[in-house]
Length: 168
Image 1 (cartoon, rainbow, N blue to C red):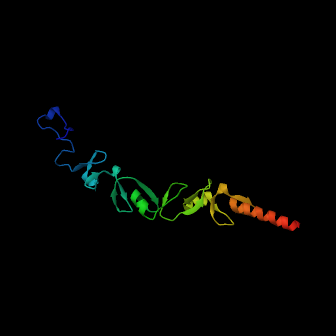
Image 2: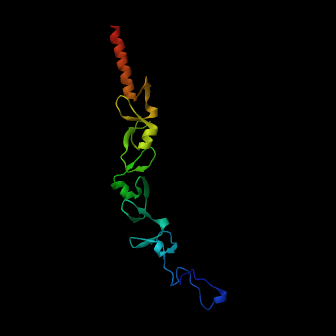
Image 3: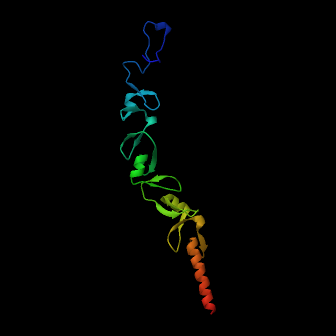
């Protein structure tokens, strides 16, 4: 008997057992949270039983696991180990995980980042001269062209040079 024994004054002659100690019940204690659950609803991991709230099904390893995990768009739930060794990509803009490759771009602070397709189409544009992707805020408009700072400066220098040579 556990400390959850029930005492029923009317039935003091047959001490009642809690559902966890009753011989007809098939329950197990979750190794993580200590709650009792029907054994059929538990998952055995490394010799211990865990409830659904304390473990997760890793779609990468195709088994129940404990620990940290992330949702990978277009794939499912993946453990930290699977994220590191699988072919998954992290978007530095939105923080999401994807199974499709990301695109390298330059963020508004000038750092090289990996960007998912959704963030790429919403927040980044390719420079019309060099073709690299930059955050919208880092591009300069010159006529109908969108240019990164380097290409913009180069175009201005070239236009200054051509004006100076035409004056000669």
